[in-house]
Length: 292
Ligand SMILES: O=C(O)CCC(=O)C(=O)O
Image (tube, protein in one colour):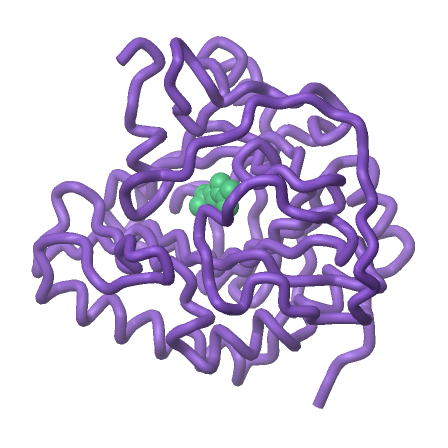
């Protein structure tokens, strides 16, 4: 059964002002259980692997292992495009309460861009340096939402997402430094953002809805509990991508709410186009230092 759109005016206003919104109950308990079942299966499989494996549309690996990954201490940090290999992930992306929330923010016509899982298993060093999403996935306009669905409770200890409220209304920060696309904001600016960051805490089944220009990052998981996020990027149907998809899939451009109009809407902005990661994910780009 489909849910009706469910964001209140207050929630929508919070999103407009702050550039993000934590919304509970984005999936049903049954949907959450199915997502967890498939993810647990991938973690179990990763224990048998010593290097990145699987393949997405452009030939890069689907499953990305943090350096130090082992059978006893698995550190599967990324699953690229899970919607292509799991019915449960596909269905939540295409038609869940999460999808309705997104349509409330950038609808009525919404299309899918890409999906991934960012996982921080207990003991893994995975962190995400501060960045905005738009410079990775520039479109003709910035009506894009990154929906980060919590498959586990997200707490201060397990590497919660951190955001700079209101930053979506500010500058677009370059992710290029000394001629290299690092996928991260310059360190002194990032430190300043970190000092003013808000933690996005919530129960499994909640979603953090993030404007594509919102600055955000996250620290390593220092707890014994996993922190798994199913991340879906959606755009308004009239936002046209300016660069190849960093996580391409045969589902890119699928209309998930409303209809296809074929129109393009553009907004004035300037940025330097990104570099697609040569390896499995942006973690390798972020690992590069600013002067290396
Ligand atoms: O996994 C995280 O903590 C952050 C995810 C993220 O930065 C993104 O989806 O752009």
